[in-house]
Amino acid sequence: MEAIYQPLEDRQWECPQLPLGVYREIQAHLESLENVTCQLMEPEPGAFDYTQSQVRGLVMTCPPATAARVNAILDFYNHQYKTR
Image (cartoon, rainbow, N blue to C red; front, side, top):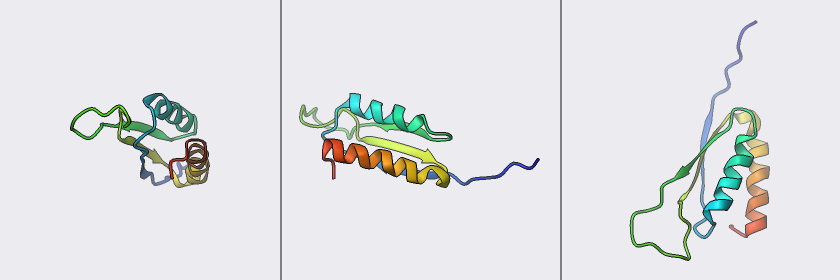
């Protein structure tokens, strides 16, 4: 049986006010999907601001086959936390 190659797509998602715990929840939710990986992005250098997130966002790698599900999960969090 021949393996089927699926190209991976890199994406970024950011919300400046989202708490670190929520970013980790989103990361866990996305990584529960097959072949999806996520990494937290380092915050921008500068003075610490309590009103801003401790991370800059998420970088995701996913195959096109899971893109619709990834979008649905991100849309849920966009709606839940009003990040648009």
